[in-house]
Length: 262
Image 1 (tube, one colour):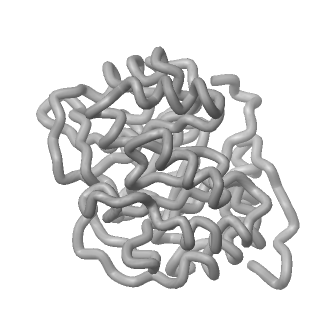
Image 2 (image 1 turned 180 degrees about the horizontal axis):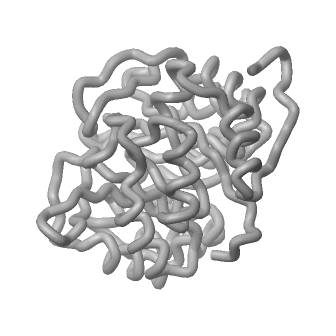
Image 3 (image 1 turned 120 degrees about the vertical axis):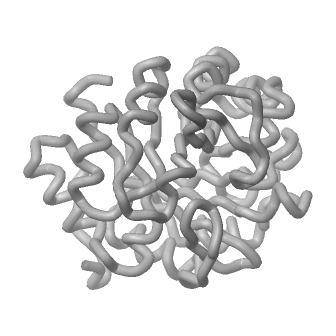
């Protein structure tokens, strides 16, 4: 990754039953607000992108909620990535038709890696994101599916290389160990995956302060960093974060907050 590439700050909406929720280590979920209202807020504040993950769709065996996708997409002028319950090209088409710009696949890609190639072939690699949820087991970072409930036999770096070879244009890398803890991104995990592939890697899991973003950009070599809790509960604002990161020498897209956002 070139040191001159603009880093992205991405807001994440984990959605269950039509509302945004957030927990710790994928457990203990609490209500964090209305997805469309939060999407409007983050768009106004200058988020570079938004990710919506329907966290119960795969476990419940259904598609991501198209009505929720549509309500969120109507609020945005930045790219929207949608994940959760995408098991086929038909599921992907339904999400794109509802307003998604990119599709993130996780469990279905683990079960049927050819789906990555199929989505990339039909919609372009730029629209094919593979979400990798990983947890350390000794010295190896192992990949999990089904919202972190199902262990796979795949190792994160090896899987990242494979998904790139199959046509993925981006990796959304979540540390299950750090998710919701606000203890900082897993820079070792992020650096290992970033160093193994030539496609952008989004770091996720553990953001608790502005230093954590600088850390994962500098030490983790992430192309983008995603957060939920610290934005949902107003621990920090996107404009203030991006201004501070810019002062640290990190290239950022700085926009003027709209409609009184701060």
